[in-house]
Image (cartoon, rainbow, N blue to C red; front, side, top):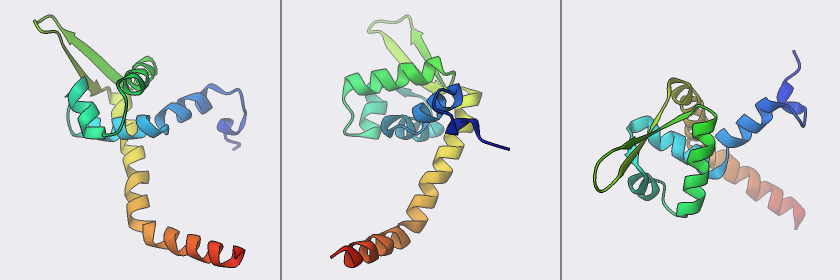
Length: 119
């Protein structure tokens, strides 16, 4: 079976782009642990601007992966959590992250061999 994501205009490719984006991946993995307020999630991820995190969360919310819950309190409180669909995607992304951690030494060896062959 041919994967649709190899076709440039397929909707699956766009969702995959959202899930595997720099901040999308980190947000999904963080939200596997628990729900977060925006500022907590930003601190948990680290090095992400407010604008980029807000944009990422909106995109993931639109895709049905993240739930945004605004609570009518003062000061306003907004919590972010994973939907069932988001949890499923986050588990897949976390699997890739774990593989990367396990295989980093092999990647570094390959890089060194590549660089040595190029010089």
